[in-house]
Image: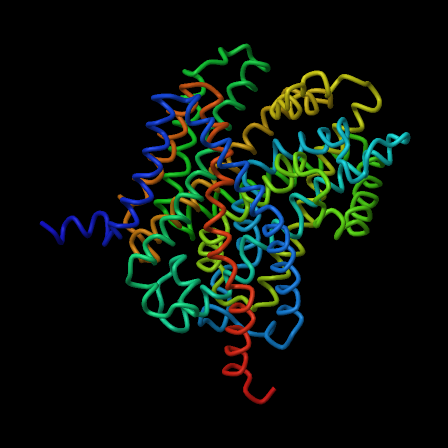
Length: 509
């Protein structure tokens, strides 16, 4: 009987399951019982987290990016990771999975919403500008800061190197606790401390994934209502979530080399087609100028933006919020990157994740968000009026519907967003299952369990109103506090392990 059970669910790490599953269930249960009380607790914890850790997170993001670049251009950049002589998958498939998983659904709705938000309410570092074009480039630059080099680097550079070297070359488990092995040794692998480390990372990534799942239900329901008059209520939202959970659970069960890969490739092709269409029929010159000028402003003001501390209230709801979100994803995302990057060199890994992917993201933000800004400049109110109250899906739909073939374009963007969230859902379902079982090919039952659990949490939270998912979004930042300490040792362990591997692979060089 025991062997049959293990074949179905694997050797589940019970302490990690109890701690992570218990706390997530407690959060959802308390939200059902008294949402206002939970929201107040989370708000206080959010403020405490951003006040005490905001500056540290800014320095951590900067250090991760620049240390990773140094490792990439050094002799260690030639090291081939994963104990393979050639890459496990083609470059296109590898980049497609990375882009879709790490960019996620936020890369669609935020791409439309954040640039217009900064255009209408300029960031304090730049302030109000008389020239609308200058204000537009500043808005794009601030968006680039939040979704650019620093955000991508924290998700899979130094931490991925540590996990790949210790797992594939030394046989240690592919779990977040392995990040602390160089510091604590065997104690972290088998003791209570290791279970707590894994549980903290699982809680952070579940919260970070449940939030987008819930918001996707709200956003697609809103889109269907605006486009086709479908009722924008819980029934529609629930059906959207069921469809999403079905897609990403099937994808996760079929594995990295099948379902996850197929979804990612489809999404990349659809995104490229949509980009090309907007470039052709949209404000082509404005997009090109905006990207170049925005990138120039971003690079020219890189350090002032990255270290800005003059307006902590603004920071809490923008830069520090995003940094907490991305940091919370860090260890589990690095685990997934480690799993799909076998045979890649350190230089390939870092250049693609920390440089190429951010530049593509910035161009994507310029096409979607820059088009929205152009439309607003030409016809004030066309985007800003629907966007009132930071209505993310309204900004996207207002932009797409103002272009030729607006209804079809809006539908395709909703599909794109759904598949983006699905690729994050399937990869995180897979990664959490790896953490729970310690197996690179976790049993289907474990993947199905976590896929359904995340969807169920999202459905329960939106059933009590947008405030439930909103509270969870703030809770994501709170969970980043312990995770940011788990990531910290990778700043020196990543370069050291890469150097040691370089000495073994290229001893004479």
